[in-house]
Image (cartoon, rainbow, N blue to C red; front, side):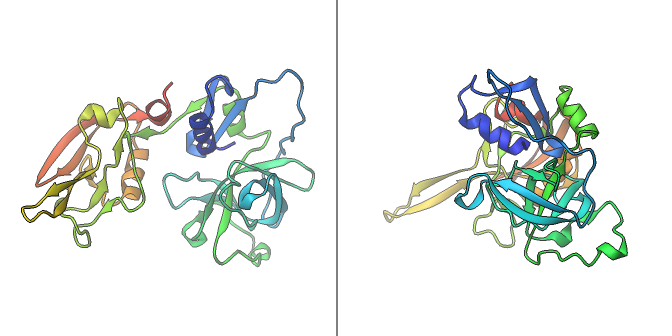
Length: 296
């Protein structure tokens, strides 16, 4: 399953119902996690393939999108070794023509021999932003790619270092500042209706209690109604806006995330933060995503 789906499962599942393999196995960079179910008998399973499929290979994705349960959706492999255009997406993925949707993430990709070749990670609405790390022969370049989107899966084969690492108990997480961000929380002084400083940056949403951001003194986004003299109310906005890390500008959340992912868990960084009319330099020690957001 994917790490994103694992995080969602842990947030919704009572403790003790689901247990990690070897007390917690995840590879956040590649969006892969392994779980061990508490069962009292041997269960049916899908075997892993020994090699990554080549472009042109027919595959079937199994997922739960569009209100279906364990539905099969056929397609083909178009590229392998695809580099994601965003820091929060896995790279080195398999690109597919399968028509997938939210609900299919974490599902297996199966070849004609009934073997798992990958796990669905994400869907891109801009496949041209992805760059392939492997050369595609001319005779395979004619494969039709969906014009609106493509689906991407993390390759999982029995011989891969990734699978070996995960099943051996390797823990790979990513560094975080420790706040939640929502779409639309990029601040641009040229277009914002509220002035939050001269430089563009990322608005800090909800600061996670006890996390690095909270310990460093960052504040959660808030709005309140302030009465005017005429009996009406004005909306007062208070927000911290991160505009740089270690002097490197971060005008959007995508930029901020890309810079943070280049750092290490436990590394101390300096955030440039706009708060009202003032700008502060704040030192912060990056935490591990799992420890900050779900504990443990």
